[in-house]
Length: 281
Image 1 (cartoon, rainbow, N blue to C red):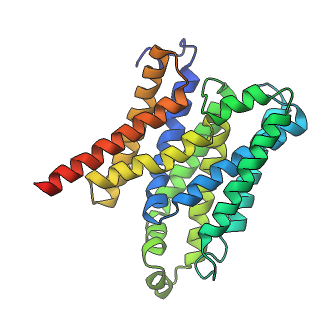
Image 2: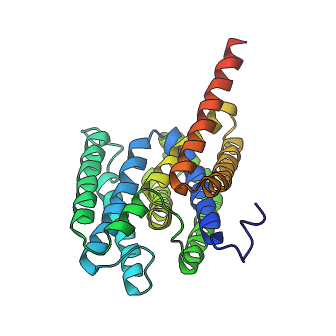
């Protein structure tokens, strides 16, 4: 592993970028799972991918290419992700119709747009297909620097306002009695999710982002009941699955993203089995 993290290693950016994306998504994913927002975790990465695909189609840009088109593609991911949040989240607590209806419609439309623009793009179809399946090898230095900066800002905000986010997540009425606005702190949580998803999709692809929003949190909740420990365990699982997954993919000459996801799924199944055995005892 020290060889993989060496500055001389060709795929060092892929190793570090995958680790940052997976760990960031795993920590935020604890709230995604506990608040039963898993379907939102499906739809938002797909919306971000649709935004990237539309920009690729409009500009003839390919993933990993150098130039202004790359930043336009990132803007497409950010814009599409936050447009989806603006469509789905406001008023969700008191909405008359289930949020799952709108989320399902958004996922269907985003998936169709992504596939159509990939099929119609004569220059970026191969690159976009690699992005969709979670091919991490195209992460450039600029992507890694941006990803690190965004992760640091999200981490600082998450730590600074963790009490308020926790309070409105699990007892909104009590939060109101204390003068905390649930809508304001819900907006902050969705802002953090949107930033992590939009940048993560651009660097690791929607499959990796969605999987690590869910699987490490599900596994961590099987082995610990303390919330602080759940965050730490989820982050540790993400680190092991991303770094170990890259080592496996590198040795077997396989795409890194699917290996990350399957390794995380194995950890989750092992955690479920362990919890079942403890319950039987």
